[in-house]
Length: 245
View 1: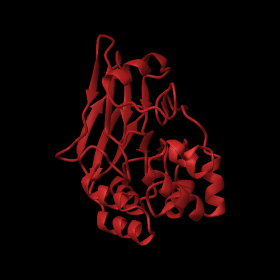
View 2 (view 1 turned 45 degrees about the vertical axis):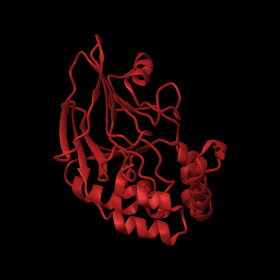
View 3 (view 1 turned 135 degrees about the horizontal axis):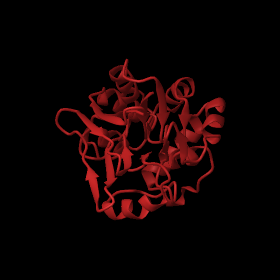
View 4 (view 1 turned 30 degrees about the horizontal axis):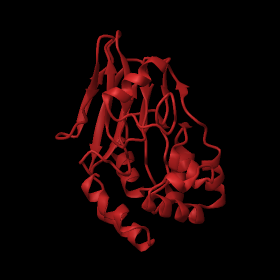
């Protein structure tokens, strides 16, 4: 089965639309590694789509916060303001859906998905040191995670840990899973990339051949920015979309 792997959509409808259009014909089922809402101005459109199309979705920290399950004290001011706005604008059915999202990791077809790390769903796996602490706790060869908004991940060859770089130029990169290695793979953020590339991110994984394809997609950034500004959300959340930061 070929899976469309999404993460960190963050209520960015324009980015999600571009990803879905670009991925047409490449996959059979859809999975999401969390944070479908937060930051962006289209939480209901995005949640409606996820509810209708994704077979497995786990919660992210912004999903928890927007469902009233997370303390906002440790959020930065822009994130806190966006969360309060989301709480006030999510339709009741969507709010309940987000509230009921399960905690990762969740196994899927021989691999698993989680949001932060296998140790803590809110922990960031940013560098090799972070990955090194997480690898011993994995019980699958392939694990997909999100949270950092950085496409790529890490591979443990049993002798060393190496980073996996995102496709910054062509927008596509293929990775073949080696039998003697373990992988932490990040599809990147659909709605708010933070690796210096503003293009929306996603990945497609074939669970039979164990081949992963990373993709980057141009989307209507200005349209997403205009909605954020019209909603009265912090300017930072609009301006950063053009920078990929």
